[in-house]
Image (cartoon, rainbow over the protein chains, first blue to last red):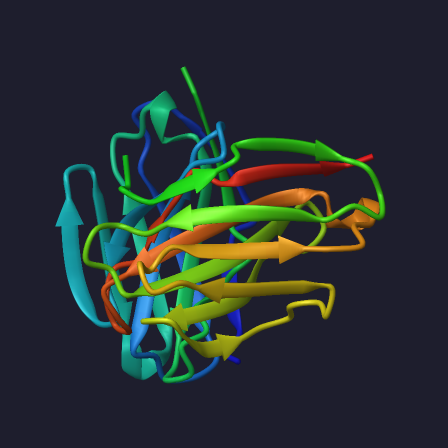
Length: 108
Length: 112
């Protein structure tokens, strides 16, 4: 299956700061999604973005499929943004593979 | 609320026992995924069903099995449980390949 690598593994932010999370994948994808896992364990879908750019409030994401990477931007971070951010991808084999995640801690 | 319902939310059982985790997908979703999340292995894909048929299989142990029923709910059966099977088990659903996938809240399994 496809290999998904995320960086950085950990990120500590001061409230109000901006940040960029990166996801590299090993093959062409037909499915790429970003998720946020909150401290209670819930996995919440942020973006379905196999290509292009999307924005949702303070979050935005860009996938450059030809170069096999995706970026998640968090602007004006808030303490509620804390948690683990996962990138997941699949390439025509129906197996949505997850990266190891980026743990984000936003301090007040 | 994602619309995906998983039961039970928490389960504590002894080694060697068997448990069944249940998942009801979102209304209209035909595809169901099962994932295991443990501290040392991260989120691991177990198996996927589409409209009752197995579509893809990941690193699912032989002691584990799953099925999707005609009403589209799914069950994951875990048998001969070992301490290392303690994990958070997620079910997720989607209308089909290439669409947004929605996760349930998970079933926390502790094997003692």
